[in-house]
Image (cartoon, rainbow, N blue to C red; front, side, top):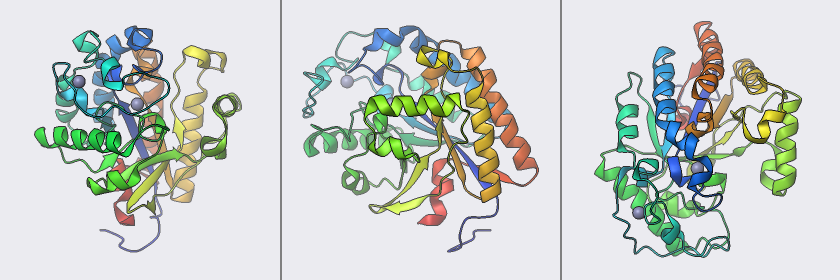
Length: 317
Ligand SMILES: [Zn+2]
Ligand SMILES: [Zn+2]
């Protein structure tokens, strides 16, 4: 059934990728306590997402911070990166800094994903969520980070091909390629994601939501010996500064993205962090279900497939 060497198939593709990280995501910036409630609810969110993905037969890419799967006992001898916003990366890591174990150690989450009926893809979102693309991330630190991530992957007998960059800061592509990574998520395909300073980027993202702008659709492309699949849209939560946007824009935009993907035979790549749903798991899961249901309708009409990153990219290699 493969269309070897041909262009995109006539149908569109819906890809969902999830940055799965619990307390690893922001320990170096706002700190774990800042999102404590959301982290405490994250297991319930993941459980609800797994149920939805099963109900709509939607295989998804779960990019996991692999330190969630191992308890190091707080011992680290890996080289620290030289970031200017944090004194000691491993010294401040939740495993060393006395954070409740449940907020950073979660092998049960992996079990939940693996016990799903649909065949999800497991990807990697770093070992300790190190910001590979930030200044100060030395080659030694990056290599240790990725080596350790891949060691955990092997310990758990996971077949990992896909990487999602922490904070979407892309760097050390050659190291990833050396360790056998085949696919990674690129930046959202908007000019400001690559070139605008952070405050302007925020304004632009806000503007896209406010005006219900149709998100871009993307195609996988060969890069640095791997295949990059850019993002289309973050499925933004209803809290934080997003509460100043009209309700439901993330659903409306995602539907437009799905239509565009189906029309053009391209990929609509939606992503978020499960903890983003943590302030109101039920409300956010309901919103997300509206997108999945819409995608399933397009699939029923033979206009769309729902695939994880590896399968969406495979034909490019
Ligand atoms: Zn540790
Ligand atoms: Zn992350």
